Length: 86
Image (cartoon, rainbow, N blue to C red):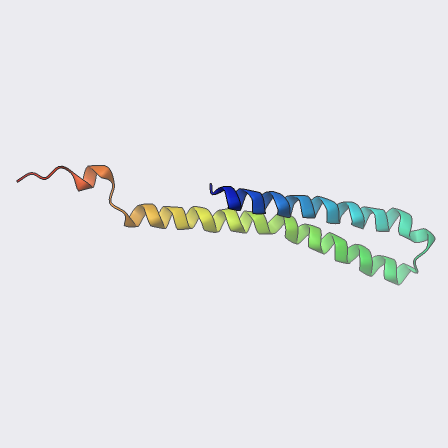
């Protein structure tokens, strides 16, 4: 896999962990200083972004694999090139 794509995927996972941690922090510690409605929306916001951060790398990897398969299907294999039978 391309090094840049691997780095991008790892950054999405890192962001997902951070968003999940912030969502948990808001749920457990936000009760002390946030109204309930704000607490729910803020926690939902962080958990939604965490879900996207964990889902999007799968989409990126799937698209990359499809592009590689398409590229491999278009280019002839070394056996098909051959040395010429004439």
